[in-house]
Amino acid sequence: MTASQVLPPAIPFDNTYARLPERFFARQRPTPVERPGLIALNRPLATELGIDISRHDATEWAAIAAGNLVPEGAEPIAMAYAGHQFGQFVPQLGDGRAILLGEVVDRCGVRRDLQLKGAGPTPFSRRGDGRAALGPVLREYVIAEAMHALGVRSTRALAAVTTGEPVFRETTLPGAVLIRVAESHVRVGTFQYFTVRRDQAGVRRLADYVIDRHYPEARAAANPYLALLEAVTARQAALVASWMSVAFIHGVMNTDNMRVAGETIDYGPCAFMEAYHPETVFSSIDQFGRYAYGAQPAIAQWNLARLAETLLPLIDADAEAAVRQATAAVNAFAPAFDAAWLATLRSKLGLVGESGDDAALAQGFLAAMQAAAADFTLAFRRLGDSLAGTAHAGALEAMFSGAPEFAGWHAAWRARLPASAAERAAVAAAMARVNPLYIPRNHLVEEMIRAAVTAGDFAPFEALNPVLAQPFEERPGLERYTLPAAPEERVTRTFCGT
Ligand code: AMP
Ligand code: MG
Image 1 (cartoon, rainbow, N blue to C red):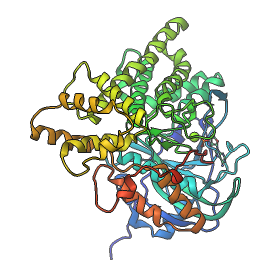
Image 2: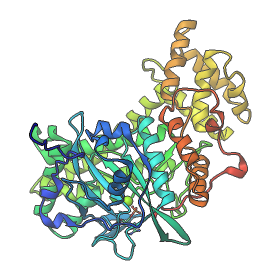
Image 3: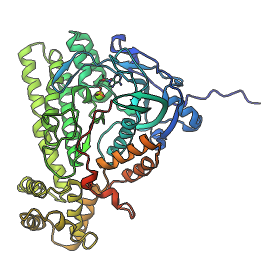
Image 4: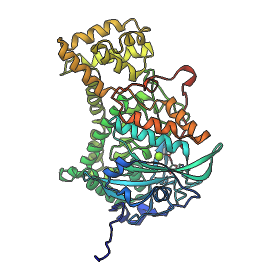
């Protein structure tokens, strides 16, 4: 007989946020639910995180995701933060229905948060119930995983469960919980939480934490806190360009929903634009188009200015000098975004090398799409197909039939491409690698939610995930997932995922 073995925990927690001063969070265990039922467990992601799935059966994983079983090594906390919501400052928000279980270091050495969303009330719940409804949980699961597959930095979904309990919104809905994975949940609003309390030591502690965790290279800079602001700005510019490249409208870019690590978070009222128009808005609470598709770069920069305000005392003891440096750092957003967006459009249009006319050429395509009300996603895809020959012959012309100027644009675009057939085939292939065919179209997401919520039918959820996991690879039998909504299917409004 050998001595009994002590197994390491199934989830190899290694927590750091819970080591920060107690005022950064509230210790809060999840509130157990009636009947946890596993909807999905993301095995590839679990493997990436070094989680040993085999250590628990489906019932136990459901209990973990529901918060009924707090796994060994977890130190559940609700994080404190503030934020500007639609321009209005709220000094205390905090995790009202999210509980951070802890962190793991993934297979690539990156520290990742594991958070339960919908796990019951916390000291930050205000009047909320701390719960999440099934629809928004499925929506976040599908869209977060789709964004990742599209190459957009995003929180991930590790698991989803039903709770067997109702939640009360405008109607009674089934409850659910999501395990969300993020590079961290520190937000612009987390910095604001300490600044509004005149807690300068807290701001410094948080900034040091963020530098160590996300931007270690800033530590070596002459001014680490300025370097932090510059690095966050650069990542945010790249992130917003990547959103716009896949027609994504975040919908609720409040400072509590912008994270300093530069990942997308909060899939509440988000939507995907179909017919291209920069003023497209879906969110029912965004009455003035503050967070419209084309407004996203400017609003990201506005949010970064709010972050900069919190860092001023750290950047320079001399207030004027601090403002000068911070302003320059934030103003670097616009050229960084413009460069990222132009690079994105170049690759979406298959333009190799750089020509001074590329920005105007790209603008011409956007203008033609707008005139023809062409579907943004399919227009880029069919443009590439138009080089490849017969597969979708005629589709492009049909899309642009409402824009007579398109023919001239198409000729100019072809003239900008290499001449040989072999090189053009390579351009077409490259375009198909950056222009997705399958995105989480709003009506597909709504249809998936409706089936689960009204009929307990998860087949559309099961079907949608694998389609969206390979957004660039055309496969037979999936045509309906490529099409914009028919008029009667069209989603015109989205609602906050509370
Ligand atoms: P969100 O709109 O999801 O970004 O949330 C904004 C704020 O409201 C955050 O502080 C959330 O924790 C809180 N919140 C949203 N829904 C609930 C809920 N059902 N119960 C408690 N707090 C909530
Ligand atoms: Mg939020």
